[in-house]
Image (cartoon, rainbow, N blue to C red):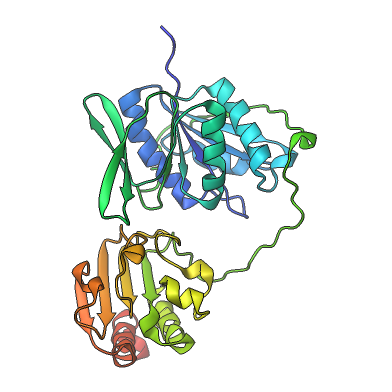
Length: 334
């Protein structure tokens, strides 16, 4: 009998060499899938200095950690990362591949699917099992419908939305084996040339990883409204988001956009201020566990999905809200 291959999670690293939270969340989904399929759970980490990340991963609930190190993997390059990943898969032979639904994954996953001649489901939020088959769940039609996808062939390949699972738990006892995987990369074979890299410094809390998000819409009226949102976010330790119109108008940076064509967030609390609740925006905040809406229009669509709603002008509501929160969170400052 042929030995079953593992479920393999591609773990992305940030600029400091730390594992991305969404990659760690994929480990939880991967464990559920590996328990159903058999073959164990493995994590693949690639880079030019991946030893520290591999060591950290080995202490999580994994059966093996595969480490690919190569000087050409110092910075993201889709063709080189594809070549390294495919070569690693030749020896690992995974039954399923999971990765976070990041910008890099959106670039890399379709290349993997074509190269491995398999299907791909992107932006998944969970798994189900029906009649002996694995179903990957994905919101469609602006998150109004949850679609279930199955694969006709292995390896299964899916990207998982942030907050689709909790971070993979730490493992008690012995650490997982770290297995070095050798790859050969030739820069002469690539067609894409990286001319320049520009990294935008961002000292604000990242949207996708934030547990509280405060977002503003067209109803904020201008940049001043977003300065008030930033002050509230500072009290809450929250990230500042926006619907598409404020980003198009320059009131908020493009990276703050939440929606179907922006970031997908799933915080514990989502505070929507001056947001009407168009389906495109709702698609980006679909996974929020508690939604607070502030809008002057009592008929705004956002109130249909909100757990708590306040009708009125944000100029009056936000200062009072912020003052009350400050007293609760820091009574000595009052």
